[in-house]
Length: 114
Length: 110
Image (cartoon, rainbow over all chains, first blue to last red; front, side, top):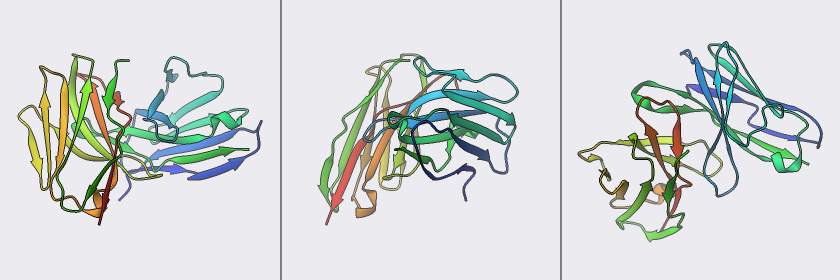
């Protein structure tokens, strides 16, 4: 069964609105979670590392004021895309590190900004 | 961050064929290596880890060449259900943060 859930799985919104995506670890605690973005036919690009109880670490080129990350508990991290624009349309995936250095991925959120 | 490179393909093969993918990495500090499988519009799922001595899991064989900094995945007796994108993933020692290749697309046809 799934060990990381993501909600919503799909969202369509108007340009200028904000969209919140939730990532939850099920049955385990995750002090660290990762947020990725994947455009069609491209690799997963790490956007930021979410740290429970502290600020997220953003990758170069990712605007922290546009992509707000909150890791308020050991099982929940949220990514808010603020003032979304069509170019933000993408597949957003979270993951949490697991044993044996693997990653558990959430099922992803497909965002379409009109 | 250093890169992980893969031939995007697609590799178009008939059922039963043997197909191999390579992946090169540029970060010599890389210590952990994985192959993930990603189906269309789905999240990646771990296929197998890659060990220094090479390892096999059923029809899948993974190998690592540290000197040349590449890893490979061999799929024998391809099935239609093997059609997917195969992602090469590399991590530095002691790091939680993986680096993904862009993936190699495999299409297995009847």
